[in-house]
Picture (cartoon, rainbow, N blue to C red):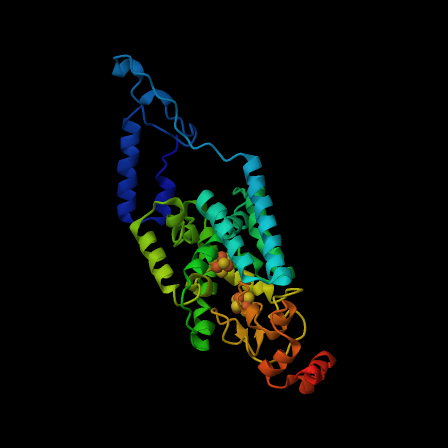
Length: 356
Ligand code: SF4
Ligand code: SF4
């Protein structure tokens, strides 16, 4: 029989040696608890008080364990996320109405947020995937992998549509944005880098060996306490502070903290069809510039890495208003101060002639 403390003393200090010797002695002195490497873990199941020990007809209650969620419910999550992503893509690329984004956000908040209690979500799944890549014995369920990959795949084709509606964390912040103020560009530029730092730290901690593994994204999720209606006071405090700030600063968690947002931003730089402010021809009139509460419009274009696909800016574009038949062509001319000649648009030039 080998002494279990011997290998520990090689790398440990003197106090650790003393502790191990004492602990080993105590274990060997107690025949009930004596466990050796050869025996493996062999704790007797009946060491707890049994009904006959307690008496008075006591019946041991059945073990209370949370049953795993059934496979079809996970499949439902994946199917609903896929549907929500498709709808979000239609919102920004076809329907282009802000109210459709709001309806989708509220529905997603209800299901993925309050009903599913914020889990499983792609943001937290980043850690599961990191742990699975680092540790062969850590199994990542297929549904979790799908939920992690689907929004990234969508971002590669149509931009960050996950942020525009399906994400419950984004939706809850979007709903409290009452009076947005524009932050200086430098705040967005440098503050946004925090997301990458958080992503690297989270991946590092999730990839650690099992005994030291941590999932900080879930532990410090500021909104999951609201979804579950319970949680530590610090979690509620952080969530409330972000929501209070979010009434004037558009989606602070998304812009400065979300590690999955950092990944989505990286991928959406290569989007096949990123979000466009105009439905068709760009007028370069600049009327949309102040419309974005997230600082995602630069040089009159939506920045694919920062655009959260919220559909707010579309209504500020004269071309969009014309597509909705809300203005006449000659009004575009007035709004944009004679861009027709400059751009050589036959349509607009004709409208100019027809204008009273
Ligand atoms: S940035 Fe993060 S929290 Fe915000 S909407 Fe996107 S994924 Fe959700
Ligand atoms: S540019 Fe801004 S306002 Fe327009 S869809 Fe993107 S995030 Fe929304």
